[in-house]
Length: 282
Ligand SMILES: [Fe+2]
Image (cartoon, rainbow, N blue to C red; front, side):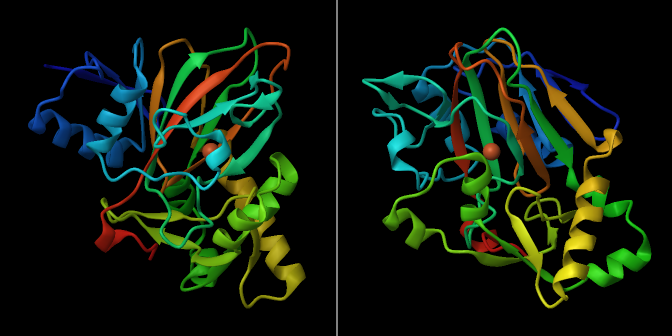
């Protein structure tokens, strides 16, 4: 199996051409994909025809898979797969996040050992809307002034799944709430594989910088959020059927546009954990 790479933006993201993710991928190709994933932070595989077992199999080669805390939205057959959808069955939502805007966030930044990647596969799409944008938080960090970098060095920020749900999703149940309390994470995260630094905060889940007065914390976060989504750091993906996007969840955040709720959208996600010895963000 030979493949090619085409960059999606000057900053980050690459399309991988010539790989069928339903096939067993040779170890040396898999090793190359892992390297490219960390290097480009987002890999796009177009024209895939993935069964759930294929998505589980491919992403399982990249790391252990997380069983998402929102059990009500997991695939009935493959619990490693989370449905992101506005569709209903017997009056009940089959997936998370409905049809509304979903603000900038890192998947699972609120967990002590957050995922390092996600693979999202487009099964059903609306005619318009539902695009997903990604922000290169390594480039955003590297371009900050030395003063701001010095202010952020060694600091932590509070991450809140509840804050995200209040804005963009539905509340967790009491058991899920217990499993996802607010936590503090380093603001500058060193990538567990590449060693590159990135801003590890996001408007959807980060509520404050620990140890700063509230107004200073708010002003600095707002500045960093505006900075991070400057056009040169952002790639917006217009989904097509069969697209599978693998992103780096330690160095990119993402958001989704709303779409017409009268149309069905179904995306299937696997969530990839880092190796246990690299699991805690530093
Ligand atoms: Fe997400």
